[in-house]
Image (tube, rainbow, N blue to C red; front, side):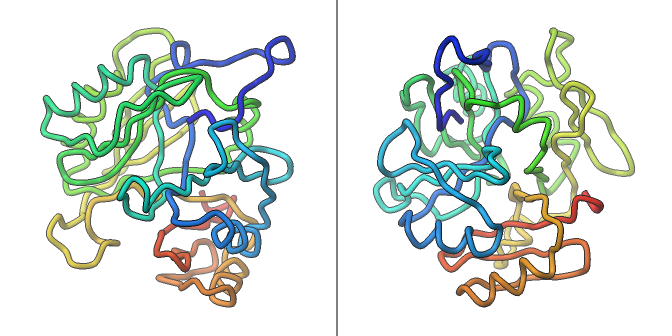
Amino acid sequence: MNEARTPRGTAEVVSTHSVFGAPCWVSLTSRGLEAAQDFYSAVLGWRWRPATLGDRFRVALADDVPVAGIAAVASMWQMAVAWTPYFAVRSADEAVARVAERGGTAAVGPLSLPPGRAALLADRDGATFGVWEGELISNWETWRRAAPTFIRLHTRDAFDAAMFYGEVLDWANQSPGCCEVHYEGGEVVLRSGGDVVARIESGALGAAPDPTIRPHWQVHFAVTDAPRCARAAERNGGSVLSLNPEEAVLRDPDGAQFTVTSRRGR
């Protein structure tokens, strides 16, 4: 999702018409910017810059590389507080129509957010994701090479989910630039340009009262010390849902769940 436009003439503008189907951004839907910025700065060491989308939006930076966005629109748009991955599409309207045709739902949009269009959707098992059509963030190629984020879909049936997303997002359609889908070790693995960009695994329970067990996209952030991040989360009002030396599943004070993963363990 575009959070900071590239000035023309200073760098190549990358759009979803040349890069499509792959994750292109992750964004936190929050109730307020200040508290979210304080928490994630303390836990992940992020700095912040304004976004072109307006006063309710910010871009997080890690080592000067854009990592993620925050959109303080949860109350205004009556949305859940959550981390959401966005996928690049050539047409947001077409993606929304495909989702509806296949039993998914459209929660918000498509909305015009110059220089592009966005929509927030849910697949037929209820996992929320977004689509973005238009220009990508400035330095997007740096973001992709740095791989500061990674996403994994916990779902009821990985193969069924792969069919849904493949049809919505044009995976494995033989067009130049499309994503490749592989089945490895019981998981569906999505590759873009040869790099693993997402995984889909079975085992989620659609009616489970625990949201960590229900189908959902889990956003992972690459860190050097997952246990240290867990301790910082607890000190700053968050909670630790699970922890091992390589990975911690955390919840921020507003309830948004995310994972920190050792760069070695990714």
